[in-house]
Length: 269
Image (cartoon, rainbow, N blue to C red; front, side):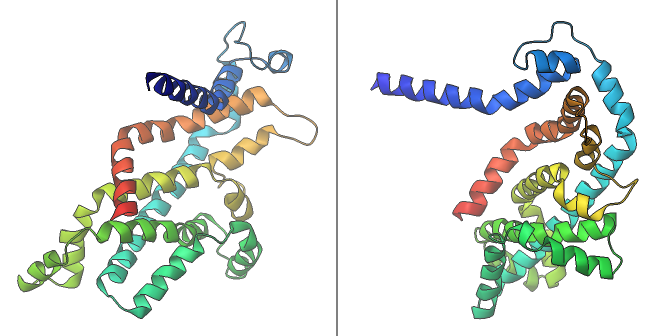
């Protein structure tokens, strides 16, 4: 029996090392020169240099690009949390065929790949002249709503409807019941929805590349600066990637308990 556990531990260790290997390659090669990367990608840097990070920071115009990414990510996630939680609350509390049908439409929408709708989407928003940061936020709301409503809906099944009835007896309106009674109880799942969508939106390249113009680029879009037609500056690109993932990793570690609890609540209840 113990032998089986040792084998499972070894397998888990190997899987963990494989999962960490891209991070190793990114961080190690971020400290190398371009020539040293092509000479030996797996080796540790002979002499660590921070010049890659300085050059990447300057060429990315990192302060402005970082602010663009923060604005898009935070505003988009706020919209997703507010509207998805309200939609899930309405669907969970109003039982009926219409509510069930709408809910399953949202669930089915998770299976639709973005690539199948991106051309019509960009054409519609182009005709409306909404192809900017604000139009991008609206698109993220649409694409992020399905999974978020699914998670919120599952979590709301575990909140007794008697809380609504008690608040209604005290004279609270449905709007007050939602904001003052229900929404505070959704904190774990809200953190989960927030982190999952922040990771997706922060790292997204395809949609911003179709929507944003010069001066509005997010970090993943700006990183494409290092990949030209005739040259690829891997040392600067890897340094830029290392800088860009730090905020997301820090946020994830601070909120990982709420993420796990929120996912389990949304999936089981």
